Length: 319
Image 1: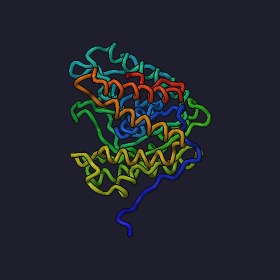
Image 2: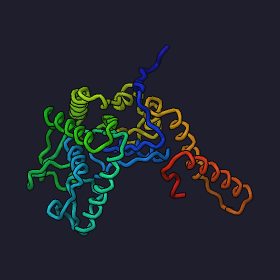
Image 3: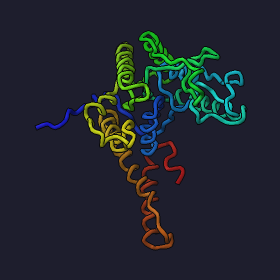
Image 4: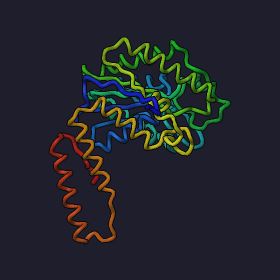
């Protein structure tokens, strides 16, 4: 007897190996997945523009990264004694123009270099809604808590969505290695501030546009992350207290499903052991000279060294 409708991720013929590089961009769910890649000690870069949600802004970010196109003072606006970019998350805001530009442009350099070697790109769209900054007639990625009266909110048209997704793929094909695999997901985070009906419309438009464009390319695939949370984990115990964001149990479940479909056997074992090592590294003691703790640390260092011998890139470098 079945008590739930389980959603599976189709197994990939091409697998993620332990030396592969994974670039991710998009919503806050993309960041949570990237955090798990990092804990597993895989090579990953996430969101060089900070958390962004709509396909138009994500395409703008990818194009900037592809062209290694820097930002200059004219690209910023001043608000509340800070210099900000409407293409970026608020994490880039500072009180000094050169600091904001340094943060932005250093991430563009990093993202450009990493994309040139990326074997996998994961794109997570969050919404079809976009805001236009009226004073500059500019479509933006983030409103930076500037008063609503300065913005016009609307849904991206189907043509705008498909054009943005198509252009993103073309730019990634040009800058990434030839065999790059591009994985599209729709964030399971519901944008309830838009309204429940409007959120569902927004997500539906994203899913339709992704399927229409991705079907034209052999190396593009859709991951049913949204469907796993909506249909498989259909229970509020899998959400945080805000009842909007998936909790760690849900994120880990989705990551496990993803790993079963996309990780090679070697990568699965590598990540599993690194997760165990990370948990062990969290262990604290009041007496670091305790012989038992010293023995524990020595054995842990040996396990880390065994893992280091498996890869060429640095792992557990902060320990």
